[in-house]
Length: 144
Image 1 (cartoon, one colour):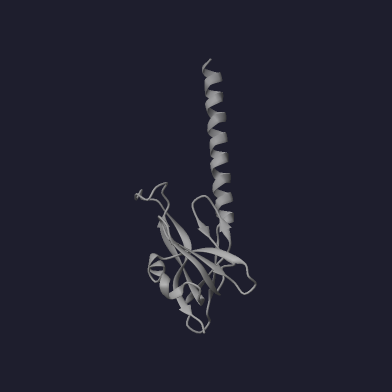
Image 2: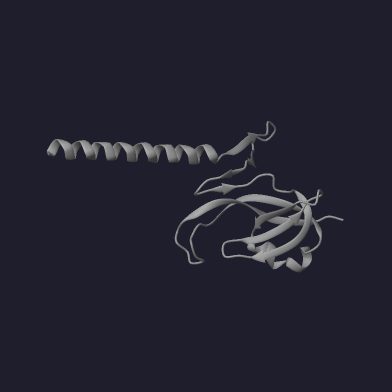
């Protein structure tokens, strides 16, 4: 009987270890940020690549320019709808400071500047101590 219980425990632990390591590998393979170094000043420039993991979401293909169609304050960030030159809508995150200036940017053609920032990763608006990385608009510049 002791042998049977020991065997079952070893099997369950092995399955748990294998599933944990494979899920972490999946998350790590899905989330990556490409960095390139400038030969002149050796500064690091981050270029986000599209990923969607359970703990981290960094989006690319975010429009650099577009017309601001809508701005909405959410629980963890501001949400901006940009319409690019082809007429395609992009829903992107932004800092709360961007939504505070909604009247200045609404229905205007803008250039968006993005940065990777930590945002709450909680089920409610209450802080829970968990965060995730998001590419957020931190500055909008009106184009003429």
